[in-house]
Image 1 (cartoon, rainbow, N blue to C red):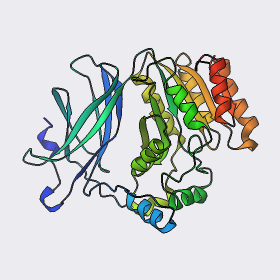
Image 2: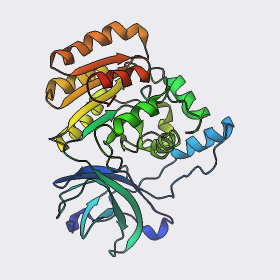
Image 3: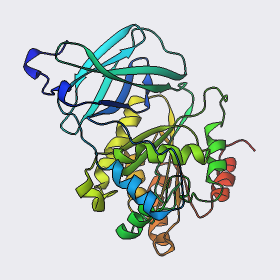
Image 4: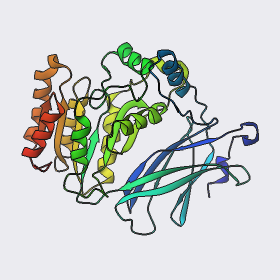
Length: 338
C-alpha cells in the first residue's frame, strides 16, 4: 500500500467517466516497465476516416483537449501480483517491477485500475508487455521523417500535415513496411518477432493516432515512447523537445536489456545522427548498426562525417535514401537473411 501521506486528491463522484490509458510495456523477468495516463474523460476514438480537412482538424484538436487526473492511486495487476503508484501532475504513471516468476518470450496481458478513496476500483484499462529472447535484436526507430513523411524540420508544415490528414491518409516512405517487416522477423520466429521501440518527440496525445497509422500500414507492432502530454493551447509547439530527452529514453531501453544487440534507425532532419553516435560511443558493444534516412541532402556530408565516429567504434552505419537500399545493406552485414 502507498503511504497515507500521499492521499488521493480526486473527487471521483463529480467526475463522471474516467479513462485509464495503458501503453505497451516491455522488459524481462527482473526488469519490467509499463506506462500510462489517467484522464477525467473518455478516450477519443476516431471510428470513421475521411479526406475532409475540417473533420480531420476537429478530431486532432480533440486529442489535445485532455483532462489529466493528478495524484490518484493506480494499481497494476500482473499475473498473481499487484503493485501501486500515483499519477503525476499530468496524469502520467509508470510502473517498474520484478516478476515473481520467470516470463516466456512474447506479449503478455496486463491490467491497471484507478483506485478511489474507499479502495474501490473506479476504472480499468488493459495493455500488453513484450518480453524478447535474450538473443534477439532490438530495433529503436524514430517516427517523423524516418517512417512517416512529416516535414518535422519545419514547424508549420509539420503541423499542417497533422491537421489536414488522418492516420490513414498520412504518407509513409516507400517500402518502409517491407523493410521493417524483414527486420522484425530476422533470425527469429513469427510468434516472437524482434521488438521495435518507436521513440518520438510527438506527445502522448498522439498515441492512438500513431498506433492507427502503424497498424493501417502494416508496420510491426511495437512499444511507443513519446513526449510529455500537451494541452490544447500548446498545440503549436507539438513535436518540439530537446534532443537530450530522446537520448535519455533510448539509454533507458539499453539499460533494461543488457544482453541484446540494438539497431538504431532515424533520419537527418534534426538530431538523430548526433544522438545515435553519442549512444554508440557510450555503448559500443551493444549497438550493432545505425541507419539514417537522408531526407535533407544538404546535410548529407555533415551526416556522413558524424556517423564516421560510430564506424570507428565498430558499429555498422548506413546513410540511405530509399528503404530498399537499407534492406540490401542489412543483407550484406547479416542483419537480414538473403
